[in-house]
Length: 366
Image 1 (cartoon, rainbow, N blue to C red):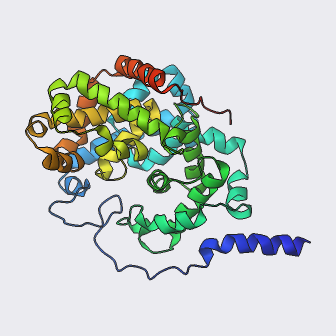
Image 2 (cartoon, rainbow, N blue to C red):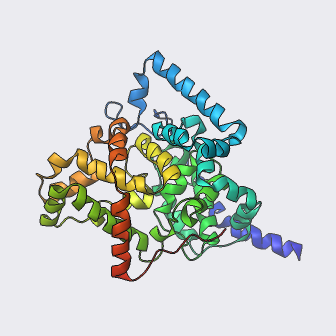
Image 3 (cartoon, rainbow, N blue to C red):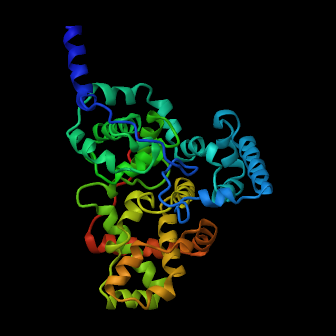
């Protein structure tokens, strides 16, 4: 009997193992995050900025890392205490950007995923090895589309793609109602660049099930109900904060679904510069989805005078290809922080729920 069980397990594990790793791509210049440089003169990454940094900026970064290490303690053990004692200090430091060398660890603590991991020993291994998913072939088909220019995911069926497969497959088993949706790959892929498979899985669970903030699973359920709600709310924000642009969008028949869906589904990790996406994720994990609304609104505000002159075709292109200066975190994020959206979001949420007669499900107890 044990032989039969082992044979069955091995057959399940071979779903991706049947695919031999492709050839290792030849070495190419990478930016500091591991992405292949497409054009060293106009790269979207922060690498160009890194090369020109003066020595005193490196020293300032080193001091910042020391402050963070003191705050979080060994293995992050003091961070919860610090969050309770000095929440405003932690919030301010997170908004300035978590040091890249500590980002993965801090993300796990502020998202609540470390607690989930400790409460569920062995669960991830069980899901990966002993369970099957109806989404396995869909995941295999899609993994090569996730950060294809990053060195970790570049080799076909290599270590990075296998880790991504494992995390997505495990989640599709863990929550069979949601299963797997293509946009989830960018969330899992981003997390895997900063933590292990198991850590990335539990952070994905924390996000979708709402361990700390509102659950995200409605972004991926059939019909994308939470996406529809967020787009409705964002449209209200545009009309309230940028009435002239909102009117221009109406005249040109532009709706948020034409440009903003991926902002919410992937939390800006799909097509935005990686260094900006990381800064947004720092705040998103700490403060919740409100920052996605704020950043989206700040982008439109920054480009307002150009967007308001454009006809439909050029407007669509501009909304999907913001200029480089608009996506500088040091410019965009302070603008986003200054926007007050809480009251409007609450009112538009009530209006949406009244109109559609349903509420987003509360987070489940894990």
